[in-house]
Picture (cartoon, rainbow over the protein chains, first blue to last red):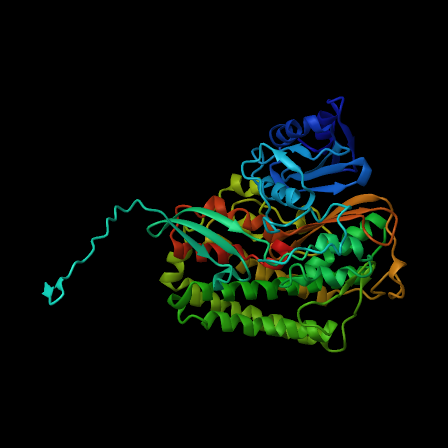
Length: 150
Length: 388
């Protein structure tokens, strides 16, 4: 499996938009296919190395979840993206497909308030449990006062 | 047995060996190399469960980056992984350069590799010293190896000081190149420093590998399988010690790494000893690259852009870019989303230590408490990078 074959396999899905240059493949899918795409990336495309998962807040256009994985043998990389939609804060979890997604999704939950459905242990990771708000949302001002620590 | 107060009753503990004890290791445990709390569930001396608590050093670098211009953030980037500041800075400026299609002169690329490899030597020195100190007196007096390694690391920091004026957090990289060129006689000093360190490495190896306690505490301890390593996304020496031949300097060469000859060490056993072996080879390969650069450093400018005069000087078009470098701890990556302005719309920092640490809950159960210390040290986490 090389990058060209991987592109072709990904393009078989009519809902997927495949972009990117050369060995850096970018694929965007509807949120409903998120978990399915991850399984396909791992089993079908040989992207066994999990690099990172995070999110981008596009304000009124809603949140976008991104994840990066690599096929180290080919080698090529895959950036998966999905838009959750305006006001939507739930997303399918990849933690059971890639164990590395476990902590990354906890961080995205902590920073963006995205609830990853099916995550075995979804709780805040960097901030304290009593923190109010999700700092990386664009609506969260940098100078937001925080309640004093106990 | 009796006394004037009646018979002395010794309470028999009803210990069946099945009770579980919860023990907090940290957040201020010396072996954590920072602030890290492991909530261990113990059965006797054996760990059966781990909950890793991180975030004590969280400064929300990602939010900070959204408020700082491309010309401002690189010197803050060095505060993520403060033990290897050079590679953190490089990841950020590379992401901005690629997105804005800014060229970097050859001399600047070579200088970036030069400081990156010296940084790897300094970082591995600190890792070896602290790790051996964690494993304690069995290695010939608690602080012996530590002090030797710190002695060598100081030599590299001296080089950085005469190059950049700072010992730890440099601000050496800038978008378009580097900020400082080598001062006079620096190359000669650099050469004699790496010669000395290379000689001293032999002493460490003799001291450690001839020590039965060191071998007992590292061989077969904390085994990470190849499959787990990839799945969790650990990188750097940990990944290579688990039998995966992955080095970003080879896989996706950046900053002219394709011009240099070096070997990528791979071990297959995946234990603490394998991680030690990989890093000991990396020391030497880094020194080899440093020598190649000193022999063939091209002349020319060190930056393709003028010096920084205004905050909004660098603008990055709309788009996204993920740039990654092979830091001493593995894949240090920066996912940058630009919106055409002088500040990033979003920046995600992929710290190597964050993913490396995430493997701990998978491998620690089944080991004794003392092994937790050896495993933690072999992972070489830097908490500035874990918590960001």
